[in-house]
Length: 271
Ligand code: SF4
Image (tube, rainbow, N blue to C red; front, side, top):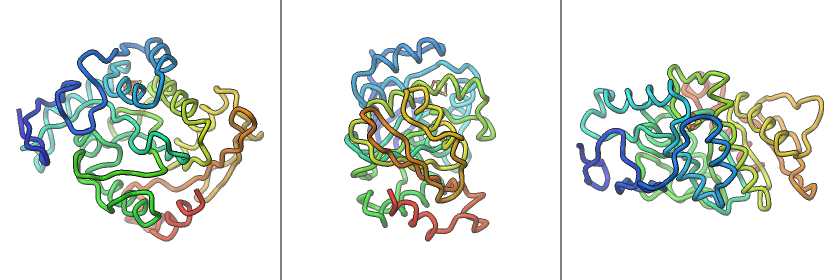
């Protein structure tokens, strides 16, 4: 048991559901998906995004990823050895009524897998939340840990895979297993959704595939990903939803200058 860096309450790593971690949407009674078929069943039956988030955070459908996220949580990086690791899937974070959605790839082993919140506690998140603050979506420019007071308005952040994968590379079957959570997120958001920002080509493809599975209008041939690329999806009732691509906020892109603050601001301002 170690103290949470903000609240000081003690937690085991990984963190048991409903044990008081800031922002934990699950309880000890939240139903757990143990295989891909149960992911489908529990995702479809989630009545709202809060219930969906809770079910995501206790999912155990991918044995390799469950093993990895929990191993990382129990071993921990030297710099964080005095704090507990979340060690569970990171659910969507942000405004439940948001008209704008960001879709990323997957949590980072020592970022969201440690803090329990999307893009929180790593360099990618530093970039993303600073930009969301500049664009007026976030109440503060920093994201250090769940419970730090960060709140988003008008935007939600989710991922195409909710568990941290080894080398940041989920397998195709793991991406497929996690897809029903994204499908349901889009379906529940559809009545108010205006635009989606896909961070990287994998998130772009995952979003297009989810839209297709839900029967939304998707342009053919498949729109190509690029920074600033745009496509119009048609949600139920032929409501247009703008899909905008952005290079991922990974260190590989931000350190090399492939993605600059101005480029990210430009895309966010178009949402
Ligand atoms: S990657 Fe998705 S489907 Fe697989 S265990 Fe994590 S949350 Fe469940």
